[in-house]
Image (cartoon, rainbow, N blue to C red; front, side, top):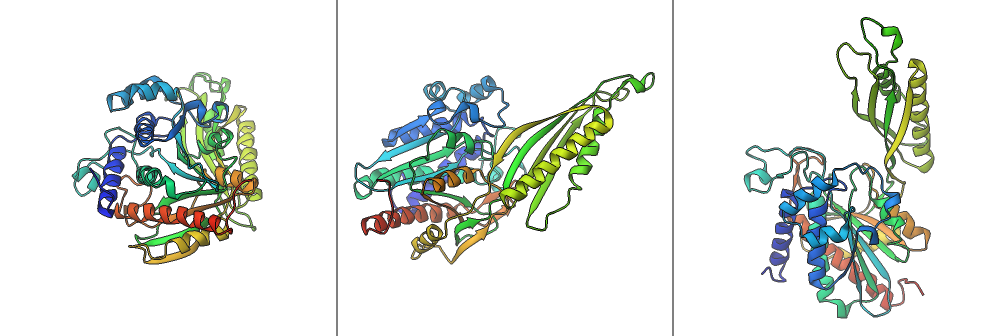
Amino acid sequence: MYGETDNGILGYMVDVRRDFHKYAETAWCEFRTTSRIASQLVGMGYKVLTGEEFIKQEHILGRNIDEAAEKSRALLQGAEKAWLDRMGSYTGCMAILDTGRPGPVKALRFDIDCNDVNEDLSAGHRPYDEGFSSVNPGSMHACAHDGHAAVGLALAMWLKKNESELTGSFKLIFQPAEEGVRGGYAVVKGENVDDVDYFLSLHLGLGYPTGTIVGGVTDFLGSSKFDLVYKGVGAHAGGEPNAGRNALLAGATAALGLHAIPPHRDGITRINVGVMKAGEGRNVVPSMAELKVETRGETRQLAQYVFERAMEVAKGAAVMYGVEVEGISQGEAPCSTSDKDFAELVVDASRGLAGVTERIMSGKMPGSDDASWMMEAVRSKGGKATYAIVGANLAAGHHNFRFDFDEKAMLIAYELLLSTVKAIDREYLEGRGKSRP
């Protein structure tokens, strides 16, 4: 239907991307998305792992969903019941291709979840104008993960068709719950990358225009996402205020104190209180408050510094108002950086690719991404890892309700991955690459 020309491949990716965009699913709710991906992969001839075959339940972070409701919606929107049954409670999947020939194990990761955003439904926003804006309230692909998943499926088609020309094996990781850095750790604990020699992930956009390639991101910020839950004592605000313990004031004091944590001389630190909910009624001393907080640091030591100071502030606010506080982890990602020689290989692989107008060896990560768990796991066992950027012109910034990206960038990303895979195999066959004995 699509053909193997550039236009045919791009047409396939555009259709897949727009399908995922229309039926956007947030972290740990990607039941339809996973079903569609897994079904296509099996149809191509891949072995596919999902559910508890793929991730470790006990290492899941930040999962608080109405599973029955999410699965019901997924089924109504086109998920296959057989796949919903097979994946059980946990989304995401991994496709495995073994060429049967010696060579390195190559893993490529594609995130699949969307953002907690209500998409713009007005004229001038292309997804709305062209009929593929999200139909799911509070769920929008505002960070190009729909594009990443589409590129991953297109790559899977090419790998399978060209299996006889390749070496070693491939693992295509379609990761759930990247937003809030909630899914990567469970993927690593599923032992999915223990044997990987080369790990590659990429992101579309990130402030770079269409035609720009960044071989490897450096200085991922380590991040902790957590909730602070304050529990006080409710009381009549007029008749007996002295009997109450005001959780709202404790939470408000904590919020101000958290943002007063000083920066560090050794590098970047960040903290943000993104949500605060508190209280029960106008005439009630508030008995509860909840804050959603994140911290970030440029190094492991800086990430630890800002997190520990945040905990001190949170506990101090509780003591001030005589309430209890509990910190609940909702997501985490370590610091990481790309291997320079692997980033160089990616840049070299981009030479000669149509549409590439600028090549940059390395660039800073403007935030965090839990691909860093996989990068660090692969590197700890002697493998190499890089996180590339494929520039894409944007209609609005990442996580904005009018976000959209230049879909032609998906073709550049697809061709870059193909060229990089070929370069890895070429190095191996020439005796310059690496693989496990």
